[in-house]
Length: 149
Image (cartoon, rainbow, N blue to C red):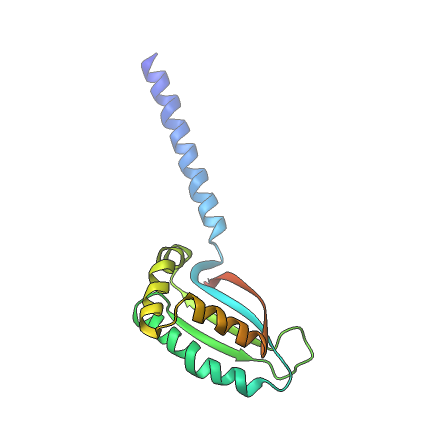
């Protein structure tokens, strides 16, 4: 009787292992999960390109370089559309190692940036208000990069 139970148990384990391997193979058959990208869609107000580009070249660039240097972020990119007739005309892309790294480092990154730039919560809020006069943030999405095989 014990050998019958052993046989049934080992057969069940073998079947479960085969199913789990086939399911894993189906999920990642065509790609490997890559970095996580924060994609911010921005609409620059008409005639305010230079003012917003100045902000990007100073404060955003400085904060991004600090984040990369401290390992909170991998890289960043800024993409500008040639036409202004769509809902957005600029994308700000920030690359992170993973969702876990992004969430784990959020508070630490805020503190490091606060110390390095000297910008407290009140100054940061004033900066948001000032930039709202030259651009609208239409939204931010976090997306996983898919590296095709």
